[in-house]
Length: 438
Ligand SMILES: *Cc1c(COP(=O)(O)O)cnc(C)c1O
Image (cartoon, rainbow, N blue to C red):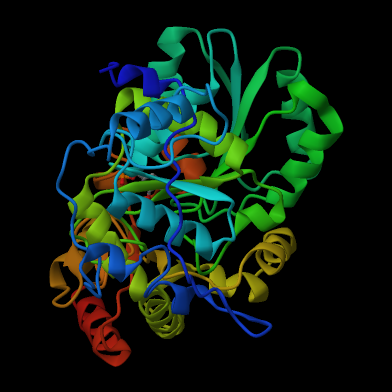
């Protein structure tokens, strides 16, 4: 048989969708929360099992030689439309395909891909888009590993980068894109809100700037890491992004028990990225995909509750005498930064549940607070059912240079908090008690 590498050269392995899929009742288009229970899965293909089994198999049997040939004709592009079934598990499997269908539903994306981690999703995206001499223009700061990947790893292969601050105005974005346009810009890569500054990127302004400066073939796609607010509170495809990236480890997985990533976007971009994923094998495994299917059934419930809890906790913290400031998107409307508040109104439907708490004092006070917490756990990460707290200056951002720390507001009195789905008043009691220890 032909080596599976031939299939690497293709757009992938689209599977025929289940018959009788319910996406509408009369004129009513069903909401994502409803579609998470059944979309993309036909029980009758799995002995009537209500839930999809976990398909632990490395390869898929062709019903006959002619069918196998047809698959490969599709897979190698000899016949348009891709393979008509599954071929080999480095390319795809039933659990991952159902997951991809359901991920796309939340943002009405044309297509989606599942990955073994947020970073493998980001790395596969970059590898599929850039070549030596190209420039990546990005907002800053980015997730630390993403910054490392761009500057230290892709930099070794002759890829250049230019950045603008996350809160940049149209004029500032224009200036950076104009400078970058003297070379070939392969990708515009955003992350919003930035961590830990919480600065929102004006995606509409980036898209308008891109469209004004680049034409035709030279127009780079806009990709955005939507891990902090998506898919419930921000849907950047609607503001002009072409590709959305996720660490599904966070809100989508939501139980701090798995690591995975996702990419959503137009069919054309997803096909480009799928080709790279097929080649290097950064797909998530069937078990993780199955766990994510379970997680997605409660995504809206979990995120809504965490968001409500965060609003109550932030109200409490903001009025506490030992608190200097609370960096919470929900307070933008009452703050001084009219521009950020304007982006928030245009781009977000909720403030999320991850925020920055600045205590009065320094490291001593921050550590006393963290060590006195009883419900909130001392751990990095976010978006889980449980509340987590960490100290960026001493943990996630320890190796960041001192001036850059100051510029980003990563001070010794900063605590990062991700609120979970516990009882809000219990959480307030925990924070109130811990503040007594400060
Ligand atoms: C966690 C995170 C990532 C990396 O995701 P992994 O699943 O840990 O690989 C990327 N971007 C953001 C914003 C994150 O929070």
